Length: 320
Image 1: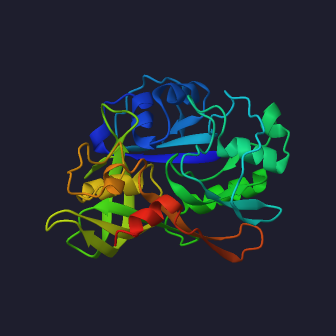
Image 2 (image 1 turned 180 degrees about the horizontal axis):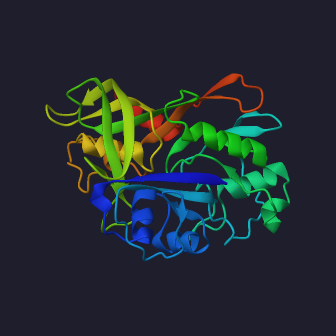
């Protein structure tokens, strides 16, 4: 279970509580927000509010207590899906997730997920029977993002890892990514810092904002660039997440004008013929979780794991 805290600024005064939570949480729908409010798990400045239509009158803090990712709508079936396991002990598993694998069951993806694979790997019957243990996904990679992930094997580890990942200023977790983007950033290294909020019309997408949403910060450095004409190029960029917002790197790369190759949501709609076929036809966002480092919640030792580029990204790299 998690606690979600939202700081509400003057910009949201007069807005309904359920809509506000859906917009600012970056993870909850309006219907989920309404259920949480009606169940008494939402506090506004430490006062429980049970009416989803309540309008915010002053700047405040909204706290959502005992939030759990909503796996309960899906019967988790163990499936024999191969996993690339980088490390495992009694508390956790570190995997190199393949592109194309969804992390957990959701509408349209009720099977074939990382949770289904972990249910088989752990032989954990409570995954199937909706027992006390919730699937131990504490951070997520998008379906078409590959690379390093850690999964908890029990509730205690899950809660402690969730707290580690929520501690943005603590340096207890380091997350590094490799991506391939269109063009060459003018600044070879830098820090992108914005707010990220849900898109007002396209509810599955996110956008940057100067004033509203959740603060997001990404460090980036251009590794190398490949020119195909004097004005057409791609670059390999190494990023480090200082916060963990949904679609953060993809949104931030779009923000600086260098969207990720293959990104069907935040990327180019039409790609000029001067680009090689592999670039024009790349079928997923060219984004890879290359390194994950964290303090083990039980042993307190710092662990570091790296995942090499998968074959499709190696083909992009061969253009350099």
